[in-house]
Length: 232
Image (cartoon, rainbow, N blue to C red; front, top):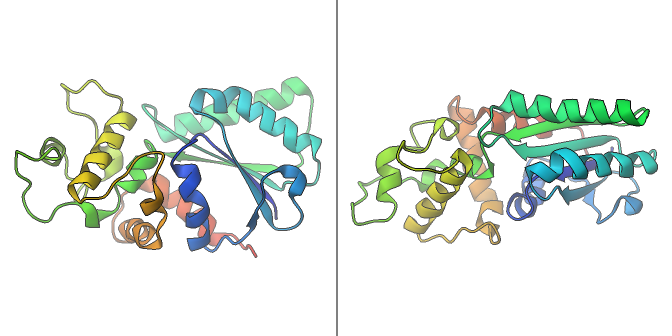
């Protein structure tokens, strides 16, 4: 089986995902371009953000796979729900694909699967319970306002909304929450340098979370799918 991954993310998740795939037993070989695909390979490309992904990048990807018939068995699209719910975002992408195929009068010779991070990649990263302080955080700490607002260890990170007086999107608030939580733990996390999140120890903590709680359903769907694949 050969796969084509199209990710909304262009900075953090696209750097982390190849390692996460290995931890889930997905050992296909990554190649830079569809022309290099032989057997049991995958290509991974960024859609340069959700707006581009669900229009130009998605359509160009379908064209590329269609023009290289027989190279790709499955297209995997991964994007954020942001302020929408997961099913809305899935259906949005599905409808875009269906309409494009109909308008172009083509028949797909590959399957596709859509995964949605609810609400963003950082939401999944907040599933690492070991990061959350075991002791009380002082008001003089920059993480205190986040610590005081929502406990991501006891409560599902996917259910966290920004405080009423904070004018941020959910995805943006989750990023800032994670950034300050990491800084409190003397860990540097930026979208350009997310390497620590690609470590197996970090990934295992998120897996531990979904195995012990009903939290992070969108990550659980993603994890269950890839761990059930029969790959090389």
